[in-house]
Length: 258
Image (cartoon, rainbow, N blue to C red; front, side, top):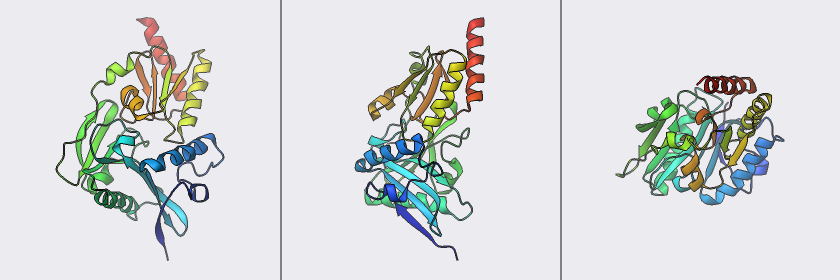
Protein backbone atom coordinates (compact mmCIF):
# COMPACT_ATOMS: atom_id res chain seq x y z
CA UNK A 1 0.00 0.00 0.00
CA UNK A 2 1.35 3.41 -1.00
CA UNK A 3 1.58 5.98 1.77
CA UNK A 4 2.22 9.64 0.90
CA UNK A 5 2.98 12.53 3.22
CA UNK A 6 3.91 16.18 2.90
CA UNK A 7 7.12 17.34 4.61
CA UNK A 8 8.09 20.99 5.06
CA UNK A 9 11.81 21.71 5.23
CA UNK A 10 13.20 24.21 7.71
CA UNK A 11 16.55 25.51 8.87
CA UNK A 12 16.38 22.99 11.70
CA UNK A 13 15.66 19.85 9.64
CA UNK A 14 17.28 20.67 6.27
CA UNK A 15 20.54 18.83 6.91
CA UNK A 16 18.64 15.73 8.03
CA UNK A 17 15.82 15.74 5.46
CA UNK A 18 17.72 17.24 2.52
CA UNK A 19 16.23 19.16 -0.39
CA UNK A 20 14.88 17.35 -3.45
CA UNK A 21 17.07 19.19 -5.97
CA UNK A 22 20.28 17.40 -7.01
CA UNK A 23 19.77 15.00 -4.10
CA UNK A 24 21.78 12.31 -5.89
CA UNK A 25 24.90 14.46 -5.46
CA UNK A 26 24.76 15.69 -1.83
CA UNK A 27 28.49 16.47 -1.77
CA UNK A 28 28.44 18.58 -4.93
CA UNK A 29 29.09 22.31 -4.85
CA UNK A 30 25.65 23.03 -6.30
CA UNK A 31 23.83 21.02 -3.63
CA UNK A 32 25.77 22.68 -0.84
CA UNK A 33 25.14 26.13 -2.28
CA UNK A 34 21.42 25.37 -2.56
CA UNK A 35 21.21 24.32 1.08
CA UNK A 36 23.09 27.42 2.20
CA UNK A 37 20.78 29.56 0.08
CA UNK A 38 17.70 27.89 1.58
CA UNK A 39 18.89 28.46 5.13
CA UNK A 40 19.24 32.17 4.39
CA UNK A 41 15.77 32.32 2.79
CA UNK A 42 13.59 30.48 5.32
CA UNK A 43 13.49 33.59 7.50
CA UNK A 44 12.01 35.54 4.57
CA UNK A 45 9.00 33.25 4.40
CA UNK A 46 10.27 30.86 1.73
CA UNK A 47 8.64 27.42 1.81
CA UNK A 48 10.17 24.22 0.47
CA UNK A 49 7.67 21.37 0.60
CA UNK A 50 8.46 17.77 -0.34
CA UNK A 51 5.90 15.08 -1.01
CA UNK A 52 7.01 11.60 0.05
CA UNK A 53 5.79 8.21 -1.10
CA UNK A 54 6.71 5.29 1.15
CA UNK A 55 9.43 7.46 2.73
CA UNK A 56 10.98 8.26 -0.65
CA UNK A 57 10.87 11.75 -2.23
CA UNK A 58 8.23 11.95 -4.97
CA UNK A 59 8.33 15.70 -5.72
CA UNK A 60 8.57 19.19 -4.29
CA UNK A 61 7.40 22.78 -4.54
CA UNK A 62 9.29 25.94 -3.58
CA UNK A 63 7.57 29.30 -3.15
CA UNK A 64 8.11 32.63 -1.40
CA UNK A 65 6.58 36.12 -0.98
CA UNK A 66 7.07 38.20 -4.14
CA UNK A 67 9.23 40.77 -2.37
CA UNK A 68 11.88 38.07 -1.90
CA UNK A 69 11.29 36.15 -5.12
CA UNK A 70 13.98 35.06 -7.58
CA UNK A 71 11.67 35.61 -10.56
CA UNK A 72 11.64 38.94 -12.37
CA UNK A 73 8.01 39.96 -12.00
CA UNK A 74 6.22 42.95 -10.50
CA UNK A 75 3.22 42.65 -8.22
CA UNK A 76 1.98 43.31 -4.71
CA UNK A 77 0.97 40.84 -2.00
CA UNK A 78 1.53 37.72 -4.11
CA UNK A 79 3.28 34.43 -3.48
CA UNK A 80 5.64 33.33 -6.27
CA UNK A 81 6.23 29.67 -7.04
CA UNK A 82 9.88 29.18 -7.95
CA UNK A 83 9.84 25.48 -8.72
CA UNK A 84 7.50 22.52 -8.98
CA UNK A 85 8.87 19.11 -9.84
CA UNK A 86 7.32 15.68 -9.51
CA UNK A 87 9.32 12.51 -10.09
CA UNK A 88 6.41 10.10 -9.66
CA UNK A 89 3.72 11.08 -12.12
CA UNK A 90 0.11 10.13 -12.66
CA UNK A 91 -0.89 10.35 -8.98
CA UNK A 92 -1.87 14.00 -8.69
CA UNK A 93 1.15 14.96 -6.60
CA UNK A 94 1.76 18.17 -8.58
CA UNK A 95 -1.80 19.34 -7.93
CA UNK A 96 -1.49 18.36 -4.27
CA UNK A 97 1.55 20.59 -3.93
CA UNK A 98 -0.09 23.47 -5.81
CA UNK A 99 -3.18 23.25 -3.60
CA UNK A 100 -0.94 23.27 -0.53
CA UNK A 101 0.50 26.58 -1.75
CA UNK A 102 -2.98 27.99 -2.48
CA UNK A 103 -4.23 27.11 1.00
CA UNK A 104 -1.23 28.78 2.60
CA UNK A 105 -1.75 31.91 0.48
CA UNK A 106 -5.32 32.05 1.79
CA UNK A 107 -4.12 31.83 5.39
CA UNK A 108 -1.62 34.63 4.73
CA UNK A 109 -4.37 36.77 3.10
CA UNK A 110 -2.41 37.06 -0.15
CA UNK A 111 -3.82 38.46 -3.38
CA UNK A 112 -2.88 35.27 -5.18
CA UNK A 113 -0.12 33.03 -6.49
CA UNK A 114 2.21 33.65 -9.43
CA UNK A 115 4.27 31.23 -11.51
CA UNK A 116 6.59 31.80 -14.48
CA UNK A 117 6.54 29.09 -17.16
CA UNK A 118 8.30 28.49 -20.45
CA UNK A 119 7.55 25.66 -22.95
CA UNK A 120 11.12 25.75 -24.27
CA UNK A 121 12.83 24.43 -21.13
CA UNK A 122 12.31 22.00 -18.26
CA UNK A 123 13.94 24.54 -15.95
CA UNK A 124 10.53 26.12 -15.34
CA UNK A 125 7.38 24.26 -14.23
CA UNK A 126 4.96 22.93 -16.82
CA UNK A 127 2.19 25.37 -17.75
CA UNK A 128 -0.52 22.73 -18.19
CA UNK A 129 -0.70 21.60 -14.56
CA UNK A 130 -1.30 25.20 -13.48
CA UNK A 131 -3.99 25.75 -16.11
CA UNK A 132 -5.65 22.59 -14.81
CA UNK A 133 -5.57 24.15 -11.33
CA UNK A 134 -7.34 27.31 -12.58
CA UNK A 135 -4.34 29.59 -13.08
CA UNK A 136 -4.68 32.04 -15.98
CA UNK A 137 -2.02 33.60 -18.22
CA UNK A 138 -1.74 37.39 -17.81
CA UNK A 139 1.57 38.37 -19.44
CA UNK A 140 4.42 37.12 -21.58
CA UNK A 141 8.03 38.05 -22.30
CA UNK A 142 10.66 37.27 -24.95
CA UNK A 143 12.23 33.81 -25.24
CA UNK A 144 8.91 32.08 -24.53
CA UNK A 145 8.23 33.18 -20.95
CA UNK A 146 4.65 33.18 -19.67
CA UNK A 147 3.21 34.67 -16.48
CA UNK A 148 0.34 32.82 -14.82
CA UNK A 149 -1.66 33.84 -11.78
CA UNK A 150 -4.25 32.35 -9.45
CA UNK A 151 -6.26 35.21 -7.95
CA UNK A 152 -7.65 35.02 -4.42
CA UNK A 153 -9.10 38.53 -4.41
CA UNK A 154 -9.55 41.53 -6.68
CA UNK A 155 -6.11 43.05 -7.27
CA UNK A 156 -3.96 44.41 -10.12
CA UNK A 157 -2.41 41.74 -12.31
CA UNK A 158 1.28 41.01 -11.85
CA UNK A 159 3.44 41.85 -14.87
CA UNK A 160 6.89 41.50 -16.41
CA UNK A 161 9.30 44.37 -17.09
CA UNK A 162 9.50 45.45 -20.75
CA UNK A 163 13.15 46.51 -21.07
CA UNK A 164 14.70 43.14 -21.92
CA UNK A 165 16.75 44.39 -24.89
CA UNK A 166 18.19 47.23 -22.83
CA UNK A 167 19.45 44.74 -20.24
CA UNK A 168 21.62 43.03 -22.86
CA UNK A 169 23.39 46.13 -24.17
CA UNK A 170 26.05 46.52 -21.43
CA UNK A 171 27.40 43.01 -22.09
CA UNK A 172 29.66 42.91 -25.11
CA UNK A 173 31.93 40.34 -23.48
CA UNK A 174 30.86 36.90 -22.27
CA UNK A 175 28.93 37.33 -19.02
CA UNK A 176 26.94 35.12 -16.67
CA UNK A 177 24.45 36.68 -14.27
CA UNK A 178 23.34 34.22 -11.61
CA UNK A 179 22.11 33.44 -8.10
CA UNK A 180 22.32 30.19 -6.13
CA UNK A 181 18.56 29.53 -6.10
CA UNK A 182 19.05 26.52 -8.38
CA UNK A 183 21.70 23.88 -7.56
CA UNK A 184 22.34 23.27 -11.27
CA UNK A 185 23.72 26.80 -11.68
CA UNK A 186 27.22 25.65 -10.77
CA UNK A 187 27.17 22.93 -13.43
CA UNK A 188 25.75 25.34 -15.98
CA UNK A 189 28.47 27.88 -15.19
CA UNK A 190 31.24 25.27 -15.43
CA UNK A 191 30.02 24.17 -18.87
CA UNK A 192 30.16 27.72 -20.20
CA UNK A 193 33.61 28.15 -18.67
CA UNK A 194 34.87 25.05 -20.51
CA UNK A 195 33.56 26.46 -23.79
CA UNK A 196 35.00 29.91 -23.08
CA UNK A 197 38.44 28.47 -22.38
CA UNK A 198 38.44 26.61 -25.71
CA UNK A 199 37.69 29.89 -27.50
CA UNK A 200 40.09 31.93 -25.34
CA UNK A 201 37.24 34.10 -24.10
CA UNK A 202 37.23 35.87 -20.76
CA UNK A 203 34.17 35.05 -18.67
CA UNK A 204 32.71 37.57 -16.23
CA UNK A 205 30.45 36.16 -13.52
CA UNK A 206 28.02 38.52 -11.80
CA UNK A 207 26.48 37.08 -8.65
CA UNK A 208 23.15 38.82 -8.02
CA UNK A 209 22.93 39.30 -4.26
CA UNK A 210 19.65 41.16 -3.84
CA UNK A 211 16.20 41.22 -5.40
CA UNK A 212 16.82 44.83 -6.45
CA UNK A 213 19.85 43.71 -8.49
CA UNK A 214 17.93 40.80 -9.97
CA UNK A 215 14.97 42.98 -10.97
CA UNK A 216 17.27 45.53 -12.58
CA UNK A 217 19.87 43.33 -14.27
CA UNK A 218 18.48 39.88 -15.07
CA UNK A 219 18.11 39.36 -18.84
CA UNK A 220 14.97 37.16 -18.49
CA UNK A 221 12.06 36.59 -16.07
CA UNK A 222 13.75 33.38 -14.93
CA UNK A 223 16.09 35.56 -12.91
CA UNK A 224 18.63 33.12 -11.54
CA UNK A 225 20.75 32.40 -14.61
CA UNK A 226 21.53 34.16 -17.84
CA UNK A 227 24.43 33.97 -20.32
CA UNK A 228 25.08 36.99 -22.53
CA UNK A 229 27.67 37.48 -25.29
CA UNK A 230 27.95 40.27 -27.87
CA UNK A 231 24.78 41.82 -26.40
CA UNK A 232 22.85 38.63 -27.22
CA UNK A 233 21.20 36.19 -24.84
CA UNK A 234 22.96 32.84 -25.22
CA UNK A 235 21.07 30.85 -22.59
CA UNK A 236 18.81 31.07 -19.55
CA UNK A 237 19.16 27.37 -18.66
CA UNK A 238 21.96 24.83 -18.55
CA UNK A 239 23.80 24.05 -21.77
CA UNK A 240 26.25 21.24 -22.29
CA UNK A 241 29.81 22.39 -22.81
CA UNK A 242 29.48 21.35 -26.47
CA UNK A 243 26.24 23.34 -26.97
CA UNK A 244 27.76 26.38 -25.29
CA UNK A 245 30.85 26.12 -27.50
CA UNK A 246 28.72 25.84 -30.63
CA UNK A 247 26.59 28.87 -29.74
CA UNK A 248 29.54 31.05 -28.78
CA UNK A 249 31.57 30.10 -31.84
CA UNK A 250 28.63 30.74 -34.16
CA UNK A 251 27.98 34.18 -32.68
CA UNK A 252 31.68 35.10 -32.81
CA UNK A 253 31.81 34.16 -36.48
CA UNK A 254 28.60 36.04 -37.23
CA UNK A 255 29.90 39.22 -35.57
CA UNK A 256 33.24 38.98 -37.41
CA UNK A 257 31.44 38.82 -40.75
CA UNK A 258 29.54 42.03 -40.14
